[in-house]
Length: 141
Image (cartoon, rainbow, N blue to C red; front, side):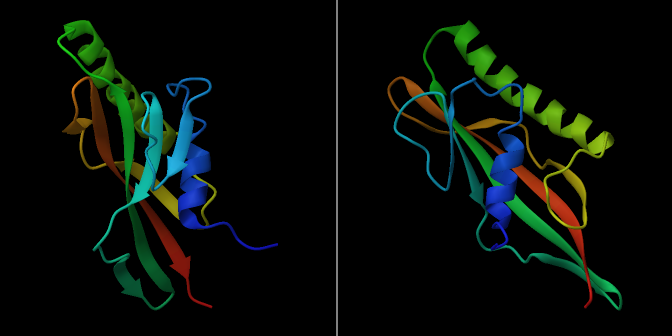
């Protein structure tokens, strides 16, 4: 059986987040054109190698987690959108502390580099984004 891609393992992990809507769509590298959809996207232009050692290599996987949500002049709606990303960030922090990681060999840390922020808007929708990372160690041989 073929090994799953890193991004697929990250998607499976994020799908367990209790703050995602029950039947929400969670894609990879694709954000559907409807609200309450999510996407995991690998960053571009980064070096996955952090540090090389004799016994192996410290690696990183950088990705964004995006969501398309309702966005308008309703202050409470926009607060709820921000709260979702605050909850997501705290969920990763707690999982990191409890060593609950994606099914990736050698993973030792997961977290966020940013808070959730508005990446793009249209008339009544916004794409929110949070930048995330995974650090893992690949042993030689």
